[in-house]
Length: 400
Image 1 (cartoon, helix red, strand yellow):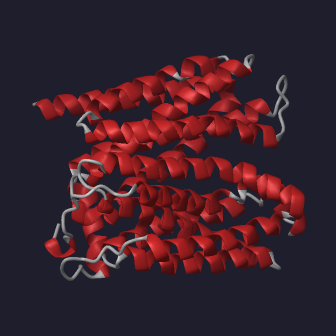
Image 2 (tube, rainbow, N blue to C red):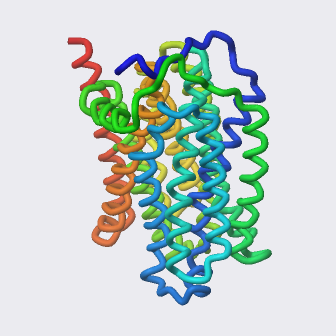
């Protein structure tokens, strides 16, 4: 990569308060992307959208996420990141207010696309900022803590949105979030140090071309991206099919109860921080192996989810701990390769995530319709085993 984006090496430890601010900001940013999921019924009623078509709200958000990964997130390697995030926060607040005031389905979709676009750019930009601000000896821990904030925001968003909507209507969810984002903007402006470039950064077109070069040539990104693709496919195989299982007899759980199960995954935030700490100590490969094995083992209790909620909760706990450990270790190892390209590295890495998530969701519903829950478990275990096998293969190739 060109040295134009080089920054001075970081040697001092980040203050704990600043790390927690980054984690909170990442969690609050990503939550905006997921508020709509428990609100689909209310949106369908208010805008007279059919149940079949209201899924387009989520689709618009995901399209915004994909555009952000390709076009906005790499900007962090060109623009000073603090200034960039403040501009993105202003755009995010405007998008949230657009949704809250949307009079028509068209404006609602525009607002959702914008929230997916800017919310994703903010979240990944904060992770890149954390990686750049941390010293080599603590980068994994700092990234792990920030990623833990993302996980908490993602899980709590669904529960919080449903509760606020029940009290004051769905529009209040986005008005409340706009106010919170305004407070966050003040906090980041006051307490987030700037990250100036040592020399002039490359042009925007060069950034996008170099992202393609990273994807084509950076072996660590390729290997860790493939592991992420398989791991996120496993995640979406489970979370897509579990709604179908638990909403049917004998469980007959409500959507709120099903969404609350995700809170079990909050323990995964602790796993994320520990995995980053182990990566800092040079144990990234070992952590990856154990986490992939745990991902495979998690499907054993999940097999009995049809008859036992206890087995289901244990399976969710193991699945989420394994997934977060893999995710944070991946990011820690990728960020260590080229400090001058953190934003492009996270952008390229998350493209693998997007592909895996989409493939997992599509395959999950098809397998569930044809083979039921046992088929879903077999699919998830097979993908987990594929991830473990791929990791072992890359170790052998590296040894030779």
